[in-house]
Image 1: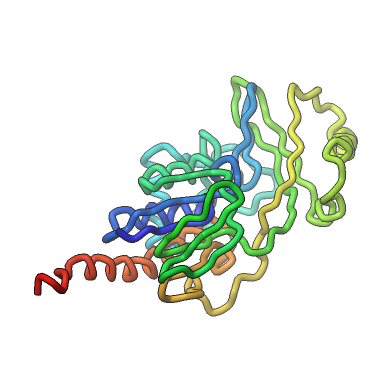
Image 2 (image 1 turned 45 degrees about the vertical axis):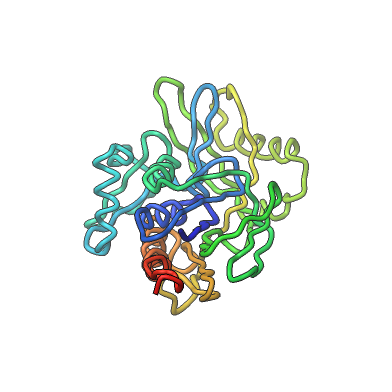
Length: 294
């Protein structure tokens, strides 16, 4: 059975792994360097509440969604998404579009697809090196020995750009509101190596000037946001790029489409379609009788 490694437990990696479930002769493993799933659809949790650090809602334009519409319908039917009813200041509503939020946190979308994939998922697995070894990919990581795979799918952004970005959201009436303060890319770059405590105080001082009536928080978490935001996708790519054919090394993600839910799903679909023929080769090889039986 072919071993398939998906590097990155964000939306593209999770949805791609789910689409490969049941593919011929394929055993899927997902690695992520973080401590949990989500990528730019991450949710942080504390004793008294939670907050979405990246995306706070997703937008579906039915007329443009095409085959991706079924993904929204599935998530809605399972209660992973629900319509956004709260007013958002400054939002420009487009005709025919619908906005959805995730009641259990935006990372629940990614976790749903990981569960559906049936893949073996491991966190804190930082991939450091790929090399060819006897017709397979040997994948090295910071923690643990190297492992060999027949197919490797890379979904993480290549440039690791610091971005502290955000919004103000109210997640749980029982626990009270969570406030997420997003700084600019420039601020994040300038303070990349600064003491987190000092950066936190700068942000809090500025927040106090903007919202002087804000009550004292019960807990604070200052986090470096190291996920890049795509501004210009790789041109002329069908949502993925094959870097090596035999054995297969392929990369995808919204860097090959566009930086939103649809872009990630489109890339996941393209990745799955490109990988499946390679897995079918393993099925054909397994069906051939040994030479000594011919």
